[in-house]
Figure 1: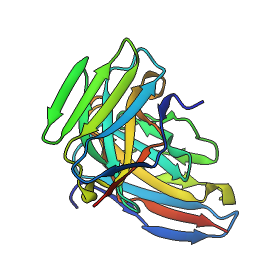
Figure 2: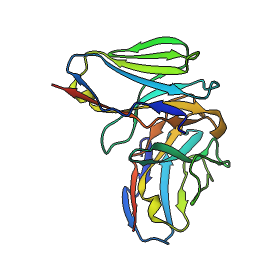
Figure 3: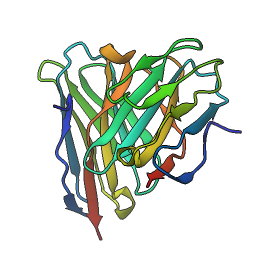
Length: 112
Length: 113
């Protein structure tokens, strides 16, 4: 069983709406949480990281972390067609030298 | 070189052949990783190295080996390729293990026939 779970989607939202992406993880000892974006045929690129409970905002993106519930989310405000991509949640795993453990990703489609 | 570079970008390989995927970074990052990405399975860790001279096994290490002779290079070797190793392979690096941004290479698309 994958230790980082995401809904595979696709998640479809209209342009200008808020997209909400969710992720749960199983290792309570995880300390670092990341959201990556991956366009088809390209490498993953970092959008945000979060280490502490609560919200962290960066432009149109907000990451939310709740360690008690083992839950991480990413909100994208004013979604644009260029946001259409696969979003990968990643959590550091203590049993593999703190390498990032990725969820399978959620496909987001923003329709004009 | 700027960042992390993989070679080749794509390869078709006959089953049973030996193949080394190359990965080089110029950021002086301590930690490096190899992942494979398959449709429906996401990114899975093959091997990792937290510092030059050390390596460790990830989630799917069977059939693969790595070495880390210096900080910059982290080659991945398939000793005898099998069709199930057909995948897109990504090399990544972080300044320190796990708690900083991971930078990815452009990927190697490998097809084993």
